[in-house]
Length: 225
Ligand SMILES: *[C@@H]1O[C@H](CO)[C@@H](O)[C@H](O)[C@H]1NC(C)=O
Ligand SMILES: *[C@@H]1O[C@H](CO)[C@@H](O)[C@H](O)[C@H]1NC(C)=O
Ligand SMILES: *[C@@H]1O[C@H](CO)[C@@H](O)[C@H](O)[C@H]1NC(C)=O
Ligand SMILES: *[C@@H]1O[C@H](CO)[C@@H](O)[C@H](O)[C@H]1NC(C)=O
Ligand SMILES: *[C@@H]1O[C@H](CO)[C@@H](O)[C@H](O)[C@H]1NC(C)=O
Ligand SMILES: *[C@@H]1O[C@H](CO)[C@@H](O)[C@H](O)[C@H]1NC(C)=O
Image: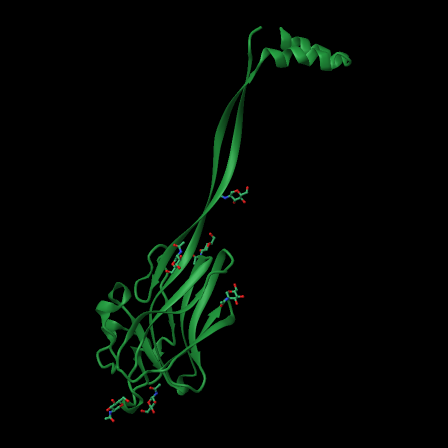
């Protein structure tokens, strides 16, 4: 007796979710979506021609100047909060499952009377989820690439993230960049081609088992011919 072969074509669908990190630069924005960071307030309360948050190239008269060559993408954006301002923020919008916020810190001694301490809150989709407070150590050194906040358990949807300062403490905030993890899901379908070999012994056994059923018997005989 000859062997029998049964060929099957099975379409298999799989879903992959791959995370990729993307950067939102303080000045260049999100390279992929093109969205820019939104800084508030827009202008200095005393001078509507002067931006309240200043990029490194707008900071001619600024008392504190972080080194641009040590900043991500050669840019930073900074401002000084005083209680009279009441509210300020830097806002990000992204679709992702994780967020990492990087600030530049300064350490001027208190006797310089510069506002050098960094105080801010982190607000995610309307709720405060964290806070940051850096006391200057008096060395006048800058600290670059400081991870001030991270959250790796976001739902995969659009989020609005704010770095904000309110209240009665003065604060110097330098935003350098953020990283978020974007999840791209991809559905792939491929065909699985299977060939089953049925040995003669298997065939010989089938009629013995199926003899009692007339319906099955006709199937068995069609297999045998
Ligand atoms: C994204 O960047 C963060 C911070 O550098 C890192 O901890 C994380 O593993 C990165 N995630 C991916 C998917 O590369
Ligand atoms: C605005 O100008 C007034 C008077 O010069 C000053 O006292 C105040 O601190 C300034 N406000 C800000 C936010 O710079
Ligand atoms: C987030 O994804 C949604 C759906 O694809 C899209 O409409 C929206 O513009 C995205 N938002 C951002 C900030 O990329
Ligand atoms: C200011 O404080 C720093 C650090 O505490 C100190 O080294 C420096 O001598 C002080 N400068 C003045 C003018 O008092
Ligand atoms: C991360 O974000 C979630 C909301 O998606 C929030 O409930 C949680 O407290 C945050 N975790 C941290 C460490 O901030
Ligand atoms: C992948 O398949 C799932 C389930 O059928 C569907 O909800 C999702 O939108 C698909 N994703 C893409 C990128 O086609």
